[in-house]
Amino acid sequence: MDTAQNQAKKKIIFSGMQPTGVLTLGNYIGALKNWIDLQDQYNCLYCIVDLHSLTVRQDPARLRKRSREVLMQYIAAGLDPEKNIIFYQSHVPAHSELSWILSCITYMGELNRMTQFKEKAQKNEGNVNAGLFTYPVLMAADILLYQADLVPVGEDQKQHLEIARDIATRFNNRYGNVFTIPEAYIPKVGARIMSLQEPTKKMSKSDENENAYIQILDEPNRIMNKIKRAVTDSEGQIRYSDQQPGVKNLLNIYSSLSGESIESALEHFENKGYGDLKKEVGETIVEALRPIQERFKELEKNKDYIDQIIKDNGDKANCFAQRTLRKVQKKVGLPPRI
Ligand code: AMP
Ligand code: TRP
Image (cartoon, rainbow, N blue to C red; front, side, top):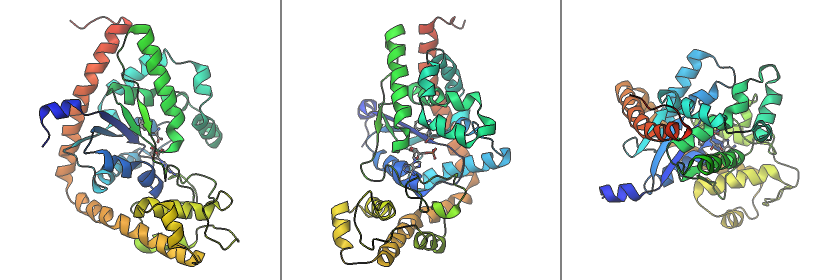
């Protein structure tokens, strides 16, 4: 049983995903799956970071629909909305307010070093907007508002976590201790699931080639076909090596979904060919995603239930966030409300 005291002592986790598309197997293995494993030991907040999505041009109706779908995918994957605070970033104005204050203690030079900014700026040449540049400051605000101890993310977010720590430390040094300094929590296997078509690139939900990624909601047939088409190599030997990135990626997927270590997966596939590997990896994915897909279909029918979660969790998050924001406003010298 969770006594009030126990609850108070539990550490805090915060993480989020952008509703820019349907979640992929990379999102699931790199982040979501860990969130589910952590939900009993920590007080967790899981956000749908819709404001971050606006840094890339979005179709409004589609963004709205996807935000709701991401929330349902969180729950379908096993996040319990009673135990975790699951909410939309835009429903808590404190994120934007803190972000402004933090942007005034963040340097252009720091933001200029962010590899994600450089990559996205290159990809969206016609739309290198200010939001894309200050994206990591909003992310720092997300995390710091809730005094998070731990932030479970995939490897690509490591640099953003470091800048969040730097900003928090700078604030604390300048104004007095307000923020907990957060730590990244990155899985040992599966922190970077690669594209099935170009296995030296990360699997991304915004890839132009649909065969490059598996969506959490892909039908079994589609999953099997995408894995069948996954790019491997001409070595013909199943090894866990950087020289064989395609095979390595399939082994990582297999290992994180089956819970088997890489060593035992290699033993399992000893003397087998790529065809067998692909068949088993495909089946493992299908079985891992089946219950999520079934629950998602149930949730789709339950509009009122989802609306209630959005409302209740949004209120809880607001309450929590306001406490930190007030402290920050006071520390930096903004006048108190009368
Ligand atoms: P995003 O889709 O960029 O909002 O990412 C949401 C979460 O999924 C973050 O924690 C990412 O680090 C993680 N993630 C995204 N793509 C991958 C991938 N290919 N492999 C592992 N983790 C990923
Ligand atoms: N930048 C993260 C991503 O693209 C999403 C994100 C926004 C996030 N705010 C966060 C992740 C706070 C963890 C904590 O994956």
